[in-house]
Image 1 (cartoon, rainbow, N blue to C red):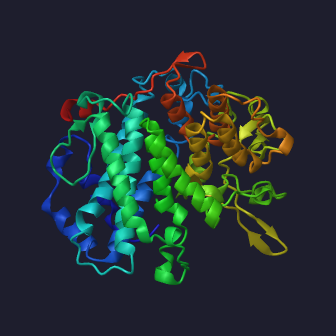
Image 2: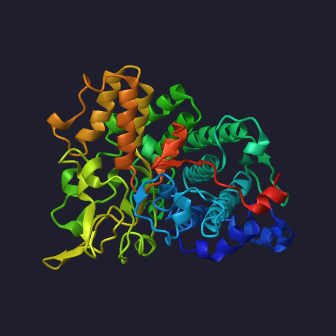
Image 3: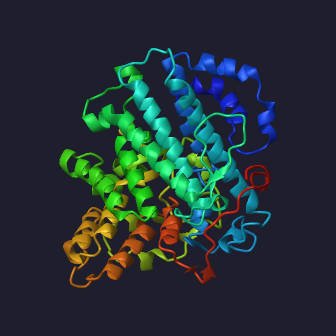
Length: 477
């Protein structure tokens, strides 16, 4: 992240908060002058964009709660949560409890603050007199639009019952401009339509994204601004997100088209290559690629991840443990993913997917692992989406699932048998198992259960709708 962001972050995060409350009364003209100064140069826009990504990495958002934290808890991913645990009430869907409601309120406020950052970029970029390098103006705009859509989508999935209701009372604000006025809620249906609109415009803006055009960039080009595109919501990440949105909205035809665009780039251009056994199961544990990083369409670079997981998976005698034991979940002995459970503090089967290793020195040479990465959108999800869309022809869907499994270490004799997985329901059952295996610590299992309308999990009747903050109910209607 760019150092210059820190100079300007305060006014964006505080003064441009989109949450419906009286804080708007404190906005002063000085902030407009600061904004004009910030957005007078290309570097200012880059700094502001970096600020959006940085805001998302907080432990209250994707650094914990929206990944391995409360969202995995309510998916019943974790077992052994005792009555004194911070997630004890969340586990039972007691969202109004004093140890749960603040977590949820902070999710709402944090996501809307990050959306405000994106909107600050979009408010200035079209009329900016700044001189941009190459295609950077459109790429920055495309990423800001995609980020706005990404976070509104998670707000929709968390705080609305579904994506189809036409009632504004069931919805949330879709904040697409900077304003001192309260932004009222619109219906989930309207939110979904605006998300798709933003994503389509983002894809148009990203038409010259190097990941799409194939243009080679290096660290010496524009100070390396366009390298490591999977740390940004790049063109193919937008396609992946669009597939996810369409699937959630009940439009498998369009979901399949978007997912296939990613798979074709992967299969024909070798983009987002499968992680290899050597990378994932390196004999030196310090160097293992624990999140299969080459396959990330989009990941957040979370520099504090080592600190964030302390108390959840490291440095504790009561770590989060899988509710379904790894021995039951991973039936293939060679599944790469089954190796990321370790014994620590005399406790077995501790998930080590997010362990942050410091590297190792071999013959005087320091080797560092691929760390500080939180997957947001994965290649494998695109295969699952296409398989689900094709489940009416089970043999076709099974072939898609087996493509993933073969690249997770399955031997030929361990792959799915199309003569056994021979119905749409059987395909769906295998997809559920893959969500349980693939997205540990990533927060996607809850949304899968919600989309499938599973009424009970682990014996609990599921409440899929987080309560909105009181100030939103008071001011935002």
